[in-house]
Length: 473
Ligand code: PHE
Image (cartoon, rainbow, N blue to C red):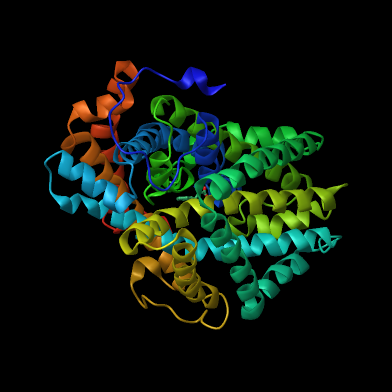
């Protein structure tokens, strides 16, 4: 099917990636989609839409995706394919080839390290998702009331031992896939999980379609209420575009490393972006239909799918089965994202210390697991600790909150802007043209990556530093 994506590009003589290669363009697209679809789409996007008032936020998000997300996705995939080496060494290699300072490898460093930080917290929520598969399958949501739904969630997060068990299991699953390598690990995972996940999403949307409140959910998602579109909503949309499209963590760079030579990245990126956005919208539709049907509020914030949704599924006919499907879909989505966060650092360790993939995956995985304990404990034993104390922007944030803030507010935008400047202004346009194939799509991309992306990211950055004074947290 993706043969049409192939475009004549001059083949350059260079070494094939040492860590592996996707076996077909189709698998490459599935892998990038697998990385992009995750908590961002199924958990965060719907609750942000709920909090910021529906359609207007959706529009803002689409604009950010077009101006920032899409160009950066092309840039990251391109850097990977051009370098054919792990993000840290790859950036170094490209910088040298271009006659630039080796200091640009900082992009690879920032991405790989941030990926591990994100994974340490992502794994905790991955654990919650797994716990909820079992709870829903066991019928725990049957005739739940609001207090009981909140208690169910609290029982989980309050109990460090339970969280530890789920966190450990989730990290072990992630390490297992990455240890098996590109062909037999990552590729097998996305080949099965992504289609299953999309099928489950289809079933859930079909179910939602049968709910009387379906139209209300469509309306809520698509009809913009511009009065609610303030600066903070815009910036939340921009930050979310980074996260949802897996930007800034080296994940797309490493997936680009394994990309087939003759695939047009300018065609792949829009397919992924469209799918990712559609998945977020459809997940929102499935969630809002049930939540409206149960007469509940969609503005519950982060608790939307772990508290409001179980409550809602508990009241709709067949909700028991649908809830189990929903959380299974979530686990698959989180899993296929988590592997792409671990991979950049694992390939670095393999190359740097010449160790086997499975050893590298285990070492890096255990490191992430240990760091994750800080997030884990911030929900219970250390919930009173506020690492930043009285710094006003963060108020009473726990370790988990602070980590979240640093990642989406500082580290992701920083990597994003460095990537845009490097690719748009420092790397020669000839190099990017060779990799992307020229044409009007290429010219449009160059304008976006040179101008739109840096300006938007600078705004996000200033906001995160509290310099613009808009309230986001
Ligand atoms: N895109 C993923 C999501 O939406 C998160 C992610 C970020 C995955 C960065 C990999 C790299 O949940």
